[in-house]
Length: 276
Image (cartoon, rainbow, N blue to C red; front, side, top):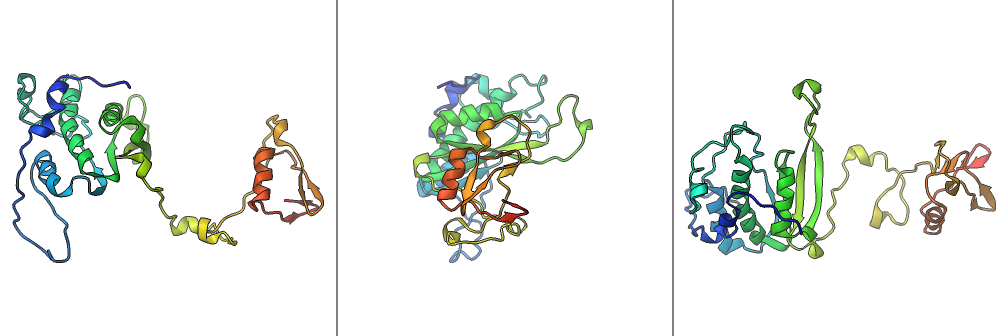
């Protein structure tokens, strides 16, 4: 498997083991008898290590929003790793490309021990989501492959966060960011699904005896007006002794359409002189 190398990697791969355990000091409690929610103020690496004794292998879902390393954030490298190359980074604001030639190295050194602790906190069937943009996305994906295992990569979600015009960039306008999703052990992860909202459900107005397992459904024409020369998509379907041909061709292959008809996933309706 391809791996990623950077300045200081050999000094941070085990840094999470060197971070001391700290006891969380409780300053105030609100409805402690009904809630286990916590807000922890402090260095997140130390906070993660402090959570480990109680929550290792128990967290089902993690979402993090690390610095994107855009050069405009002003984040400071503050991990006290015992290495002269890294010690000189302490307290320095990470700058833009060109101003700080080791900015990606600093970011990777900062992320590695935190991801190692997060991986230990995840339950066997847990998943982690990480927001990122194009600056560190390619590095983060390789980092996650190394720590979580490439086989535990579920997917990378793309979400549109910008609807602006082209004046914001000299080259390509970035209209989206990413959310990486990895599992602790993908073989134990249940199906990930999000119920559709009312704006979508209003189009699904039909139901049948499969309602409990697949929900309501909508109807869409199987025929297409495409003029592509696809002879394999032009064939007859048979319903109640009627032979039905598309005006142009079908969307589906013959094998798929016949299987859908066999499993009652095709609906035939009378339209004009021909079936639909």
